[in-house]
Length: 302
Image 1: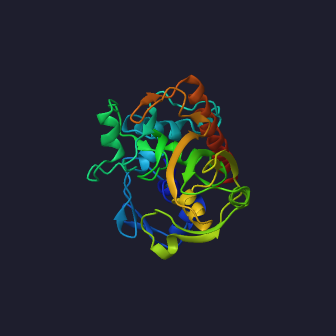
Image 2: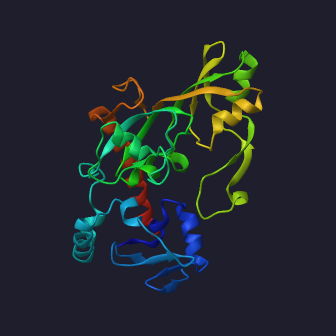
Image 3: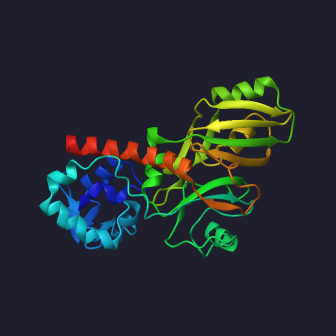
């Protein structure tokens, strides 16, 4: 089995998940849990609820399939010491799909097939047929074009979008006016903006953040254009930053994410390709970092 707080890794940090458990909001097979320590759940066997609603998809988020769940239980019971000593380079990426996609303007980054122009229908139309269910890693606004990664590996989100593990994203930005050097410096230094996160199960007030953006790299590429490198990923952040200094974004285009470049094989909207060996090495490095952190947490009894 896996630690109960990992059931919520798609939506909550470890500490936030522990708080949900301590508050008595979580049940396992109908029995309420009040203490965070010691509880483990069996994938595809135990039913976990939060506030009375069944938590679905947590096995996939933790990269567990039905095929290996039973084997994992047997191994945990009989070879626990061997499991704890398993080397960190065993990343098991071969059974997952990793795809880069040149997202066209007008496509919405959701897997909900009821939404018109959703990214799954879009990439399918462009010729990619997934063997497993894939998810976009993060999101781009509907009006934003460029690089986005899709994968069936639920570990990726935690590896590249959470906390200190957030990976840099590079955008080309064009605005409706002339950018002076003072504008670029304000962008670099950080600007106070109001953003609303897209987190389910929370009110708009809980999801609202009014704070200064983190320092970022900004380079001029034209009178009205810049290249911006961000690590944080607040909702519509670049558009909000430009609005704060008196401009509207007329074009926003992502050219790089976690070291993977759009220009490496993708030339026009709708293009897609599987990650190559060099790009997969970047993915594995991110996964390895998470795995090492989890092994250290297990050693401390978290």
